[in-house]
Image (cartoon, rainbow, N blue to C red; front, side):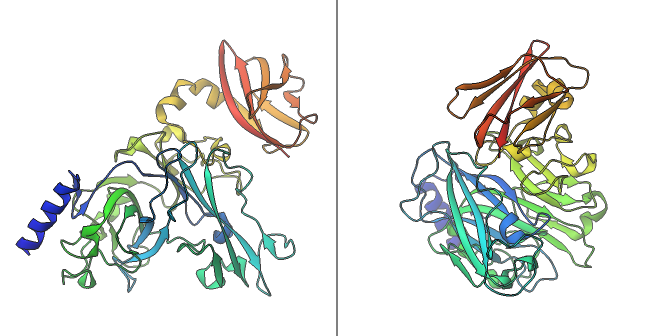
Length: 412
């Protein structure tokens, strides 16, 4: 064992890896930007994945986004359940460094669904909202029961990159890695990993994972309401009600553990802006918010949103395929963010602007090329008429009290 670990140390030094996350070498430059996992509705088209890298750079074919089972009831505890191969040797990150993975679904026969059947085809609800600067992988799923939201309802995936629209949810660890071989079914903990010891929540000292490079990782760990222990392996772990469940929530040695003090599971895992660390202030984590896909809003219940500055944040539905906000930028315009509500969005005739106690001095709307297409100096009945605008994405600038805030709006 000592010889093996020495060779690993020499290997990682030779290739420039200066740090480890327990027993996995770490690297930099690629990050998880947004995961919407097990949201309300039909998972197979409502889930959403974003990864951030170097703008316009070719995505290496050995770059994978993986999920690792952490439910103590599972026979595959500590195993890589899904391995999504993000690169194909030619695909690149977008002009803004973003890569998005979404799914559509074609229902071939029978089944049930909560959506209106459009000749059996159900598009991704995000497809028209994603930044034009992002690269999109849209996977065409086929099956016979979208409403089941289960992998068993998928008979084919094109392109087949290891994702079927149903990412593992609580308890799950999500890692962005490079691996010399497809890491699906690899164990990083437990007797099947190569170490020979029972699963204990600590990444094992041997196994295929010691040849990975770990770029980013996050775990959402639920409580033990199913009577099992829970296991998390990421660099940061959000543990549901950790204060009362810590005895059954097993975390790998060097993880940052954050108490997610909520009785509801987290469904949104997002990095703040360009941050790359593993403090709670580097991430945004929230449970199912109000609204419906794709017009999510963060819940107004404090215990379901971390950090708390994002409680009631209503612009999540305007941010797809681009950087997420940060605590700092949100706090800078806090009086505007808290005092202004813009709805409906998308809209096709009028947009209402509720401004609280702040008087609006003007509204300016720009198209995506930055050209001004509409300006209104006064609000009539707290709304602006956008019926003259063509369908598309626009930026609305709201000016009030010597300050301004911009919001992305969608005209149907």
